Amino acid sequence: MTIELHPEILRKNGREEFVVLPYEEYIALREWIDDAEDLLALREAKREEGAAPARPFEEVARELGL
Image 1 (tube, rainbow, N blue to C red):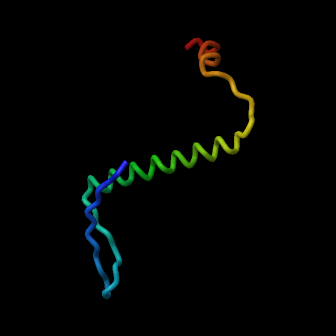
Image 2 (tube, rainbow, N blue to C red):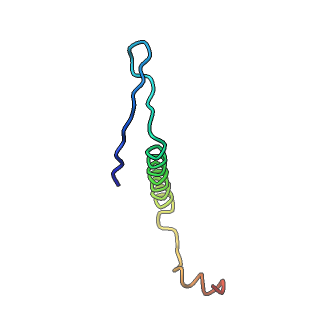
Image 3 (cartoon, rainbow, N blue to C red):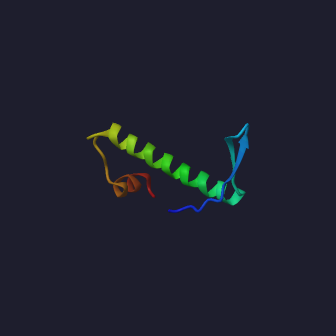
């Protein structure tokens, strides 16, 4: 996913200090970051899980009457 950003850089004492984004771009960027964090958490969970025994979803759903 590519997000086109239109930042406004604000300076303080001649140095770049702050960035202002249109709200829609901020929301898109925040969602992209949230997705990336979710992916990292999923990868970490899979790594920690290792070779733990697993059961197919269909089997569990059947047991739960779903």
